[in-house]
Amino acid sequence: QVHLVESGGGLVQAGGSLRLSCAASGRTFSSLSMGWFRQAPGKEREFVAYISWTGGTTYYADSVKGRCTISRDNAKNTLYLQMNSLKPEDTAVYYCAARNSGSITYYYLRATYNYWGQGTQVTVSS
Image 1 (spheres, helix red, strand yellow):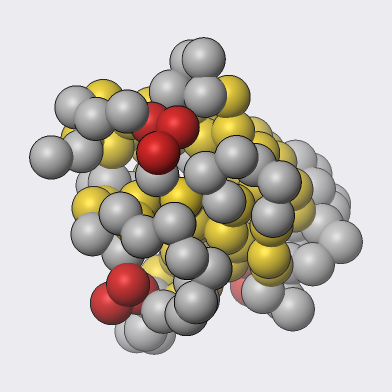
Image 2 (spheres, helix red, strand yellow):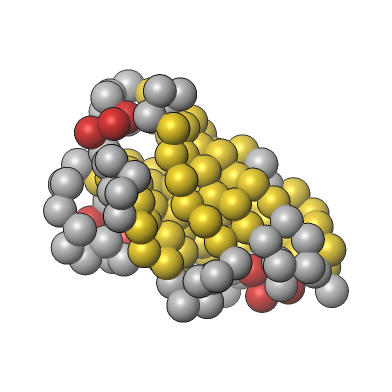
């Protein structure tokens, strides 16, 4: 079992930055590949970013590419999402997720993740 707790969300003006964190416990963090997803009101939960268990492979949704950076610190059992140049359309609840599989196959699909955090709200004002 893996327990995930997100933090770092908040209210920010358009153009601003936030860094989200996700603290993991319950299992060797370095063996898990990780992702960030988000869900805006009335919309499906969507993929934002992925990072492999080593940190050597990352993928991003087109909507955030160039503005967000996913990273991890395996010594601290923590996942990060640095978000810059935020836009009102980035407003959503952001979730971190972990998958048992080391494969990168279907990294963008929610169903391939085994564990989820409770989410942290990000609100970007115009």
